[in-house]
Image 1 (tube, rainbow, N blue to C red):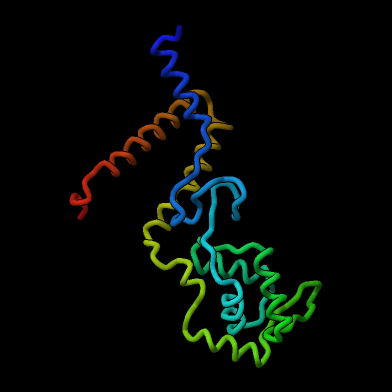
Image 2: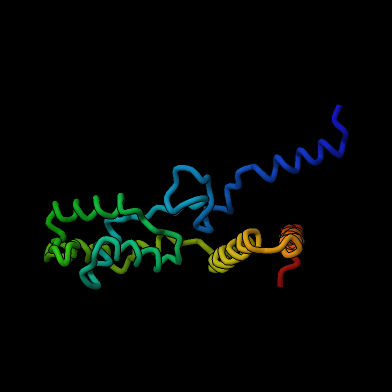
Length: 192
């Protein structure tokens, strides 16, 4: 028969090994770890890749990977379409006569044709990457960006730290977790 203390220890170990699905999708990296774009625990919002390519190419000719980087940058990391989404969209645009692709140093440089400029003009002032981040509070980006360096530092202490340093880090993280839950426990009326 298990003692109460043994059961508590087993429950704690089970929780420690349970997969963490991350924060909500609005953070740009929530959701399940398997089968999602952007790496472990990351789920990007989907955007209109075709419209985004047209809009980006109105600014200047670009390579496919350059477009991916631009979209990631313009959405603060919320949307980073995969090459498997971008290149088929560019191929479709090329097939439709909206873009041309010139080989430059082994890379394809895409630019708009005259009909492509007309098609892009139909988008008006709409920027497809803004649709992806619509409704996301900028403070969520700040919180997301603060988490990565903390995880890296904790991992570094776990790998290179002495047992005393690791124990001190565990204490800090435990206290931080408690404080974060205390924030959630506060009444929304308590906000300034």
